[in-house]
Amino acid sequence: MPVRPLKAKLPETAPTRPRTKPAEVRLEELMGAAEALFLAQGVEATTINEIVEKAQVAKGTFYHYFASKNEMLDALGKRYTEQFMATLQAAVDDCAADDWVQRLRVWIQTNVETYVKTYRTHDIVYAHHHHHDRTNRDKNAILDQLTEIIVRGKAAGAWAPEEPRVVALLIYSGVHGATDDLIAAKPKRAQDGAKFAQSLSEACLRMLSPIAKPIK
Image 1 (cartoon, rainbow, N blue to C red):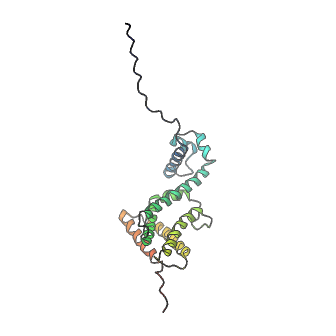
Image 2 (image 1 turned 90 degrees about the vertical axis):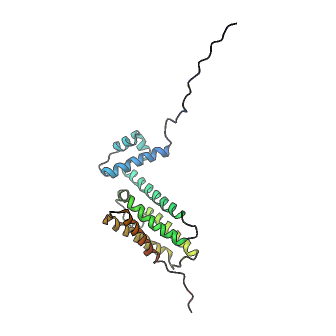
Image 3 (image 1 turned 120 degrees about the vertical axis):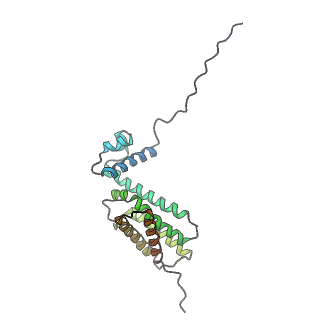
């Protein structure tokens, strides 16, 4: 009886990986490379060739997303604001849902801490934006986030400002200006910055009027 030859066992193949990365990943890598180069050597000194080389993408990929370096800079500004707001919101969401005093306190302290950590990127992407520009959509988005906390805190009875938006404007401008002062002072220890943020948050909370008492 003839013996059938044994079939050779085929080697196991590793799962195939996609040849190209998802568009959102590729875009994030491109913007991350640009941010790193801008921080290291400045916007004017950085070329598009250097950006695509660092991101390891073709030059055509850059122009698929951006018409110019300035257009990329605008996108980096939007990205910065989105990340900044997400950091603030995550910190606030860690607080008790009904503790509006703590939620505002944490919003202010996280704002200070995050700005201190990222001010160099902030100064690059907002180099041509005046802080008090009425058309500054990024400033308005953060201001809206703060205003919502104050309005909802008022509705819950935590405080009773007559004009929540006015108080939000004062707190927003005060926090930004005070943090710029902290950055200029260059604190040597992290705890100095934390103490500053705590003192600033308590000062801002005192700007909110207590619940109005009935007039006798």
